[in-house]
Image 1 (cartoon, rainbow, N blue to C red):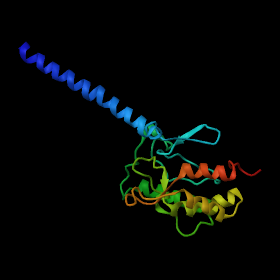
Image 2 (cartoon, rainbow, N blue to C red; image 1 turned 135 degrees about the horizontal axis):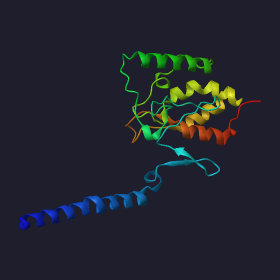
Image 3 (spheres, helix red, strand yellow; image 1 turned 60 degrees about the horizontal axis):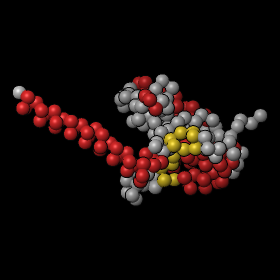
Image 4 (cartoon, helix red, strand yellow; image 1 turned 180 degrees about the horizontal axis):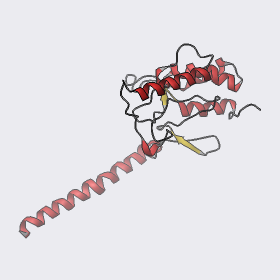
Length: 198
């Protein structure tokens, strides 16, 4: 019995050291050496050096002077990175339809000068509830509201939006997109932090 147990224990120990210690250390070391910013969470700082979020995780913006992301179903109030997930409402769900209709009505009221109908992504959550991106079209739809709140010409902000468009990965994966957090930070750099008019 001991003759069978010892080889099994040795194999277990070697496997544990290789897969539980050596491999994670190697991967962590390579990640830190090759792309430390991404390996450490892709944190984003404002101009004062204060960390304001991660470019990989969306966050809510409700002020009219900022571009708003798609809604979030992560956590009770949304944007909870510890409680990532979608609403799990099906396509025929009455709750989903009522929430989307309510969001669409709110967005139309907040964006009276926006062209056309509310883009679908502004009333639907992502699978994680934390998607940091919007399509360029959904960002441009909000542009009149942001320009009015900031009291600047829409063309000035439109150029900033165009500069923030990320292309397809490797030229063919995904769709062109805009990271809402990075866009809002660029907006603050260009025009200063927004505050409600007095």
